[in-house]
Amino acid sequence: MRPPAEFVQIIDRVRYDVRKAELVAGDDYWDGHNWERSGRNTWLYKTPKGRYFTVTLTQWQGERDTLRPVTVDDAIALYEGALSEHELSYAEAFPGVKVEDA
Image: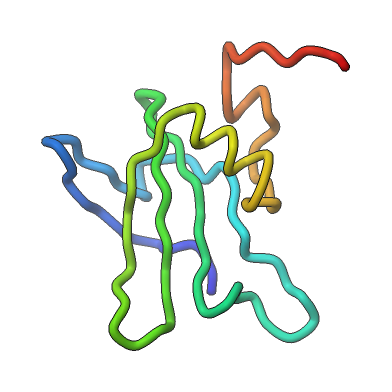
């Protein structure tokens, strides 16, 4: 699966639209056989106003594609963890977030 070209949802009176958001990261890597991760792929987006949301597409019967707003902390956890294919650098994805050296 590739990132959705169109996906819009209103949640708590806020419109989230992938066409107006910037793709930050995803889990859509080629493993030698397919792009899908267990029949699902997830992408992280950032809106022009700095909100984050995920879109998950599924191939499973009975499941629906979903859009879910996430906090900046959840977005960082996804970026640093499960969503290993980064479209933006850390600084671009999370402006103002301080990263310390170990």
